[in-house]
Image (tube, rainbow, N blue to C red; front, side, top):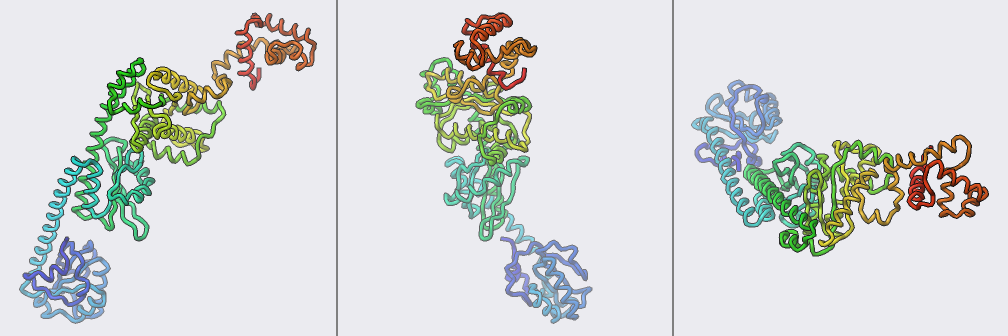
Length: 555
């Protein structure tokens, strides 16, 4: 610990005597400073022991001493050393009374003790304290390194918590708590997730101090990783600000955890290469070979139904244009917009999806296969598992952000995702095709996520909203619309009624309020104008879909 007034008084070589403030000698001394100025306050920083001989002071004037001592105490001076036998043979009573009144410790310095000896004693004590702190910091670094090697991040956190006499927590890239030490700190760490999410928005490396409520701890937050996007965060909670030794320990923990995360990135890249090989074997119809390559890393994933997810970026302008042309589907609450900013502060949607899925799988102990494929991302995850749920939540947050009255500021590229129905290893190729089909529909509809299950259970009519389909329908029916515009008949309405009645003349004529012979004449005119036979089922199908595609549009 740093030197205190008490340690100086007990220093046998200094022979100091306490004249006032005996109950406040435990205060630390930052430095010993000599000044004979009548007002040295402008040159004080606080925490000093001021040494004087009263060369320019009237130390016997009670009012002058009261003002002098009051200003010293207000400036944070922790003690006053008065040398006797120089200008005054003994410590003046006016100075003693002023120090007693202000509560400022007053030390009497004998003639035989030079001020230099006091300064040297303070300096030596500060140096010894710093040496102890550095030594303790190096010892803490060795212990933290040993724990990191032997017990991983959990062991490192336990050692760090012991070093700082508090608690420590590790967060993943998504801001979720990965590990805490001691275990009771888990709930406290979870309450800091919003603070961790805000920290990730700042340029790395970043840190902040969170002052807890009254009677709660003080928490320091630090980002981990060397890249633009933090790979995680460390929280350290203590009852008081960290000392020098504790600061060394925290910095060592940050370095070791950063090294661990960067090493994990290299391992993650190797795992992705293995995952890519497994995926290619599955798509090639070689599930047995895929199992052999997957081993313990992905083997369990192939023992139960899984979902295959394909995602790729899309121009933000195009995505919004498609979305504006379709009815919006309410997928998420407004809070999802904030969730998106937390999960994906950098705006890299593809990376954000990968991190979200992988973090959820890691927390639940699931295996998940995430493979970058050019500009695409392919994910193979257990059906009904945490990874699939995380992917859905991420897409819902994107959808909510796009549909918000005041959209969240995002990068130009957005995201479209297609998800297959549940499948097994033997049907991976079919599942991949399903995911691609769902992806294509999501792109056309301006949606973030479309699942193949939704295509099978829904109607085919929304697919007609595609611009190419509308253009085909307009070109096919335009001659009929132009004929009707001349007032020579209602061929479009007649064709719609006849097709809706499956070619039943009487029923269709009744719907139109005309004779069946009139309807027959109109259908012959349709055939003549279009140059197509209504006896051809393909023609009838195309005409019906064209009528549906243009049902809400003017000719």
